[in-house]
Length: 190
Length: 190
DNA sequence: TCTGTTATTTGATTTAGGTCAAATGAAAAT
DNA sequence: ATTTTCATTTGACCTAAATCAAATAACAGA
Image (cartoon, rainbow over all chains, first blue to last red):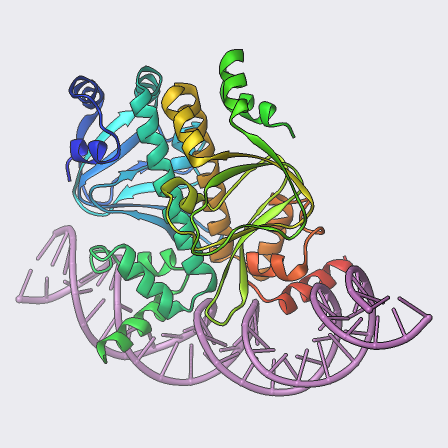
């Protein structure tokens, strides 16, 4: 998915605006399992996943990883709170596959937000989309059985469910990997 | 909490802008337990809670209510997804106390968003704040015990925890009211 | 290809919190 | 004040999913 297409799917940028905006993004080839942000750091860049995949996660007191979100291709990825508020991140951000990313720094994005009313609009719409998705996951997690949560995951991330380690998905869904393994086993018998 | 103060705490609006923006809001006195939005309707207005309190909730298949969010004074309240996308709402929105609200229609807000770059900025910042809070609740719900979730609630909504029916809080926290009642009982013995 | 390492599956057991049901308490309504 | 209605508490029991532990299976490096 191209960044240009993603941007214009939300807002009708003029040609010149779009060129200027794109000029602030830099392409990055990132290998699998690279950390883009660590806990305690400030997330300095907002990433667009052109190709590949990433996730954000945090560590529980007992040291276990909990996946907070998956980012497939064609979406913006970051430790959102840390990036937008330039506060220290509670999360780690990493790639799960060799990926092609386009990223913009906080300062440059801010420059664009001040310069272009349209960019402000784009970012608002992006934030609202993210809000909607997080709220949707919250509802899935809050009152559904492990089985139903897995079905939600398949619906929300159809292409991811079989590309990443089981443990990552299990913690994303708020269950143990043993439970998820058993759910998948039952799926076989359908 | 005054709407003016809330708006200017996010963005430095000019005096004229602010006056114009405020002129699109209408004051509404709403009695306790009034429905502002029903499931299946499109949420037409965005509300600012000047005084009072509200909540959003949905009905499970078995007819049980699940509180999605509480809105205390000094916050914006709506069925966010429905309002911003003008789609049919999955949630009910209601007051829990006699309240004083200031509301703006979708069309008027949109007018303001197009007219003022600053208003677009304000709404982006508002959306990001909401996103952060929802993500925070998600983490609380996903991997904490019933006990810890209640503690989260007390921290996030200190003034609400003892003003609304126990059942509303229990469903907000993803537990039964029996469980919450037992947790509170244990709190007595500290 | 072999070998050490990591991921997944399977089984046995435990437990937090749910369900069901009844008792008590608090508010509204007449 | 007294009845009716609604909210909260308490108790007994049950179940989904966690934990603990061990056996396979899949992978990556030499």
